[in-house]
View 1 (cartoon, one colour):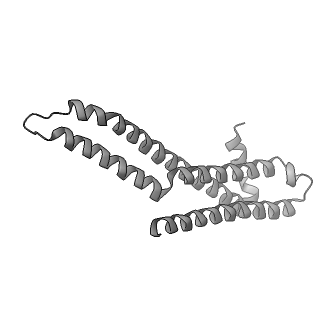
View 2 (cartoon, helix red, strand yellow):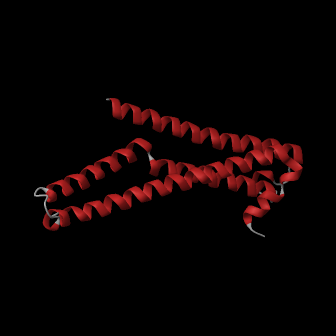
View 3 (cartoon, helix red, strand yellow):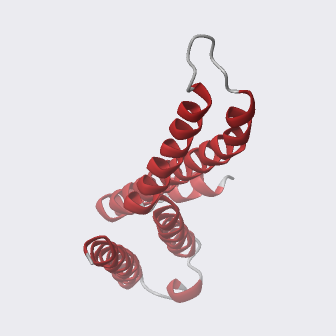
Length: 160
């Protein structure tokens, strides 16, 4: 049985808690993928533009436009600066890693609970549910604290 299916099967017994946990896992997974995509696409674009700069400088002549090499080099350089600025502003790499770690931590708790393993071994259902709620909440709160700290650090570096 696939790991995701096992986690979703547990649902009917713990509907609200399990649905919230699955919703959090889905949200963090989606956000991690989005940030990973934005980070990788921007880095690939930066690399491609950087490779094109010497090509534009040497061979970037557009008929009828005398300053075309300088224009193309300037445009590529400006695009690189823009993409780097967006990366600093949005923190795509940091968010990707942070969201992925939180997602995997939540999945781990989900699997431990479903298998009655780790801290859930030998607990009565009510105690196990309480522990699951506490442990998943602490994971989410820890991620939120790291996110808020990163935002504060970003604000300080851009303002000062």
